[in-house]
Length: 161
Image 1 (tube, rainbow, N blue to C red):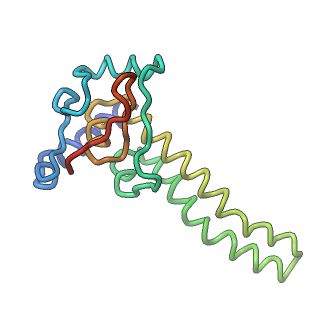
Image 2 (cartoon, helix red, strand yellow; image 1 turned 90 degrees about the vertical axis):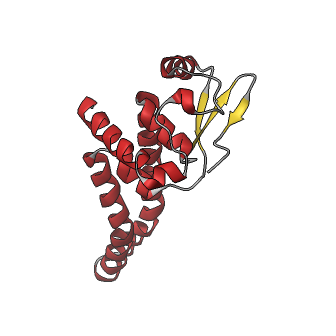
């Protein structure tokens, strides 16, 4: 896992140092984010672990380009297989329903199950990377993919984009 996080952090460094990162004011240190009153990432990790701070997904939709940056190869593979099977399994179910039995029509509900599982994997990857890497947290916060709720402060999100 440490090798994967270092790979992810090097990709984030490349993005931050690019024209895109400078144009959108993407930073890699928690102390550089003016909206968050916590300056050390270890303090934020302990606040998240104790439940004093809450991290949430900001938009309700998933972002595939961000997932390709922060996910490990195995997580990307699982998401790709699930997204492909979302379209293939119902078609196979309809074909098998005509050939074998109408019970295969139950495969039509597979996309609902697949989307729910894919969303859980996406959220797991998102929050795992944000809690284990300061650079990943800052990248996701600056990209407006996560928000932070602190007691006495409220919900904090990136203001300028």
